[in-house]
Image (cartoon, rainbow, N blue to C red):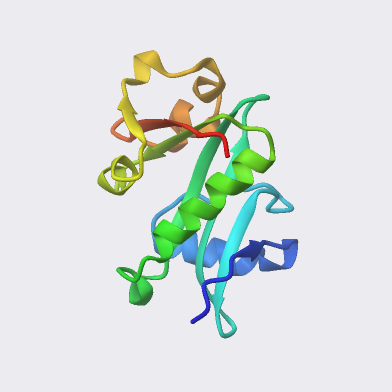
Length: 148
């Protein structure tokens, strides 16, 4: 499979929602147009998706990063996160946040730093994810994006 991530289209929404739901990730707050989301197709099947939601002029939230179970362990998530970071830099973001209950070790290995929720930037504190969509047990991780 060629690992070419491309921007999600509104017509991709049913497949994105199905993959997220199957992975127990929230879908209720997805942007209608899926702006900031990248997807990977394996033939006609959605293999992976993830997004960057700008929160203010400099901070973004990595969200809904998921790879279909049969394709995990092949480096797809790593390539997707790298692509999302490039998208964030292109959009002028300098910091990325992530809330997760499952991939904290993955994120830490890629430069994200666990941060207490009490020290969360205001931009993340006001999101639906921080305020309850993600459980209080979700780990908050933050990464400063290097300039390229």
